[in-house]
Image (cartoon, rainbow, N blue to C red; front, side, top):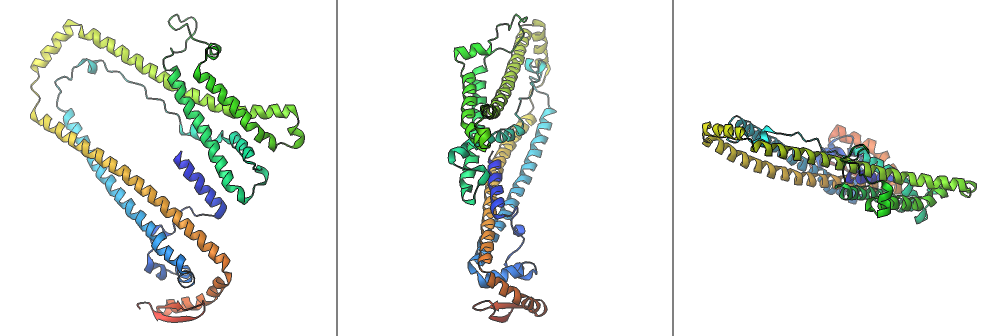
Length: 414
């Protein structure tokens, strides 16, 4: 969800003031190469002699932050290489230990092993679908805030973003809250079955749950009703006046507003029931394993054979103890390295985001200054071809004193 919010903020910035997608130069330029490169030389000279504040900000904020990002990324790559080496060493130790027989390798749990099914995980597109279903809530919020979707102005952008963020948060909150509540309320329910199954024949119909006050069912109904009545005015405001006064259209709008809420509720129930079913299957498998182990422990023939195997096996060699000790130490180091990588990833991501924001702020300020001072830019553009010729042929740098146009020549090495 945090990635989506960052993407939404960056998309809004690019839409309204044409912000860039990447950092300028990605940290490959420094002060000297800015003047030496023919592509960056004009802008650097223009800012150096016409707008010192933006020029200094370019060097000491924008490029410095980008260089810092590169250093953090190099440190992160170094830590990942060390993590790979430790993980490889853990694998080698585990393989060495596996070649040495264990004393209790013939235990009941090893003989009666069970394979648990993977835990169901809601697909990522469920979150995006939930975000898309926020459209109805968004229209209701815009109506509450007094925004006209069909005639928005630039000044209403903050309220528009606030309404969109509120709609998304409400919809995601509904999904996650209902998901957790269904699991908590229905976890102890028996699996669904047909009426001819005598073991699980007494299933409770949903109307009985409604009558007895089932929390998950009542909250689901409340979510659909509240979202329908909240979003309907925003949809009605988009209709033509004649259609908005028609009862049939009004009922259609209420149905459309409730449909989005119903789909969100159904998705939450479906994902929660899948997880409950998985928990029930795992519990049944583990219970079956416990019964089989108990029966095996009561088998006298098996116990006699196991005692003979233990007597014939040698004592655990010291080599195995050393391998286990090395494995524990290496795993501890690997965990510390993994934690260090997580911290470094957070630092790198934070620094990368700060560098991107500073560059966008600087570029926006440069554009605004160039639009406010077209005569300075035009005068510099007229003078620059001759200045560039002197720079390329004589190796001299042009220094502008006072206003643009009063120039003096000085060697590059001064």
